[in-house]
Image (cartoon, rainbow, N blue to C red; front, side, top):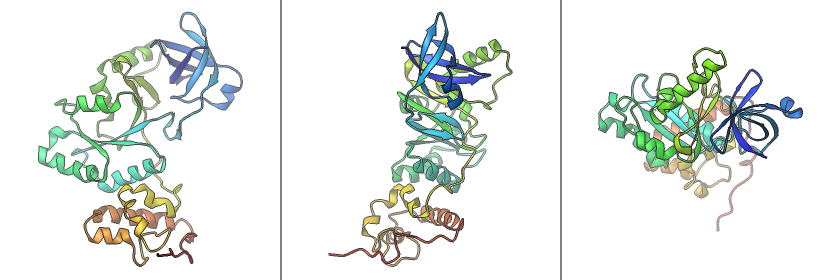
Length: 303
């Protein structure tokens, strides 16, 4: 039975990209309609020539997000601008913590490189490169970073995230300029207005090099689904020091002999990242009268 990925859902019709690059217009059979299919799902369908089909089954999802409503993401392109609007490290870290909690690999993209000099651009990117994140500097005007973007997205199913005005849609047009024209033609065919990134679409990249989601973005940035005792795992640079903390489940806040705090003092962890950690920790702990179940009477045994 043919297999494809749902790329768009409009008015009860499901647009499927199959392995031959065709677009099939499908409808789900029976229980699948009630269960709910989302953009990104891999489905099996019965082909009704030439380009219609009945969706018969869904493959197990790799992951699933509600906001935006997508599935089977392999990485996130987190987009901020060097200027206009100015970047905000606290907001970047809020996104990163959320994506780490979702276990989603992330490429950080600093766009609008044409608005700053090279030294400033590299200075903005370096703190996150030092942590271990892949960081790209791009410009949709000067085409800087186009090849790096294509390389990073090759073979992946990528969704873009970030605040409004940083150029997410422009980046999609940069790496796949024909997609805007193609999706505009689809909109005209089905009698809908111009796309304004209010719906979710999965766009196949040229030459079968992967997919990219075009979505309204992550509309929910609350971190309250993260248990406070698990927040530190969302800061990758903490991991090499945590085994040397005196207490198991150390929150790296007020505990004595905390290796993470010592690393901050020694300059091995950036102080501003640690301050962001404390900000998020306080936010999570203040939800309820929370107590750490892993530190009470839980001292490590030293050899």
